[in-house]
Image (cartoon, rainbow, N blue to C red; front, side, top):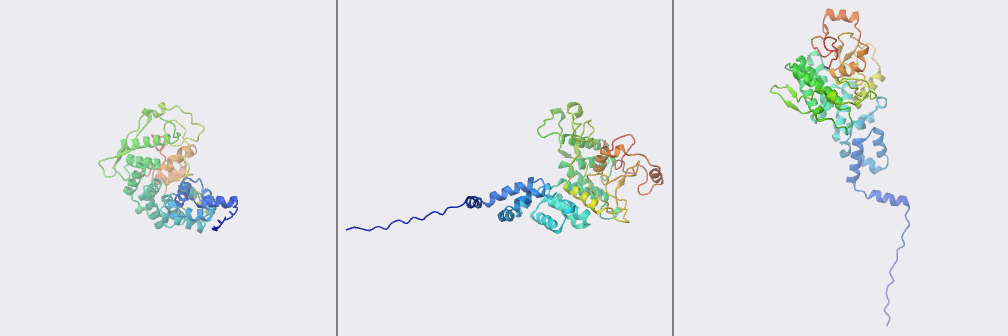
Length: 383
């Protein structure tokens, strides 16, 4: 007796194209890995176009790229938006990054709202949100607002708050904040006067500025190194920094003549011009496109890398010799002095007559000493 068996069925394989195979492999990638790659891209992107080009690859990239985990890691260059391209969609994207927890987005949008859109309360709130998370540029910007009383009257100045914010930013390594704090100690501006400690901080600011020009692989001699960790003094806001080693210039023999113009360093080396923060670059382009409003006597900070405008007449301080330039802070003054103004500062009879009369800006230095270019005993305002 013959027992019949069922024949096995053979299913014919359908031929797949190369595009289908590649898409299948791509779809098998876990979301965590894709989010990790996109987070690295948002943090290291050189411009917004680098990140946008990744979002338009596919719907999955667009969905995961706009997730909270990716946008919270966004770096400052991701918001390098040109002022001429500012639109409501760009504003919505920044607000989405702010809601995702991006510190850089908080600072960038805060600067735009405070100075460009003149929404002072919202802008200061966003910058404070970034400052709480130890964002050094936000801390320094808030200090400048406190020193100048920006957005309010002259009585709105809070010098002690400005000193405290500068101290915090200096601890985080902000060079201009450290220089500002040194001048405040020298002049007793918002803090108990301590001339030796103020000069030490100015020297340390110059040393940090000089060290920032060296490549990360360059190793300085042991005696040329200095500690950037400050220590707390017994006073309420009297911050003392560890002293940098003297005679750094004699220990470093590097030709930097082709790297840029001389700025704030007193060590005899040429220091590269620092690149403006994307927020400052946006302010510069915004007010350049907008132009000076008719009938307005509000001025811009004369430092070409700042972009901050006055929020009320006579808010910024002018040069005590020529009176033709004005600055929002000592950091901008120090950068502009050796970069440009040193070669153009000439005493003018009109300004000298106004200084002799007095008033709000009365006299050379108008009681603040280091705020303006001092052509007295010290040639350099930051020394």
